[in-house]
Length: 97
Image (cartoon, rainbow, N blue to C red; front, top):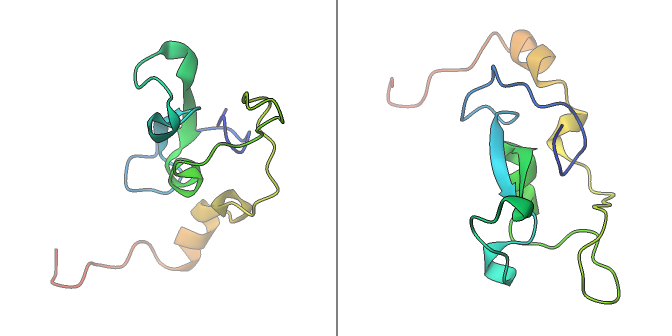
């Protein structure tokens, strides 16, 4: 389960797919979180992690991070598999690559 949006993470998706799995720092390194402490790491979708960036979510008044609560509209509101099939797959990159 994604630690940010709470939806399942599909390990068959590979980067750069927006729903590909990645590791998120619960307390961002930029905000003082430890970069390799297992208690500061969580599974996330790549796009959720990208949108979270270096923000602290669900911060309590005491300054400690609590349960992650967010009312942001994340890309998981779109069914990417259906979108991709409607678009006829991923278009070729400009330059023919």
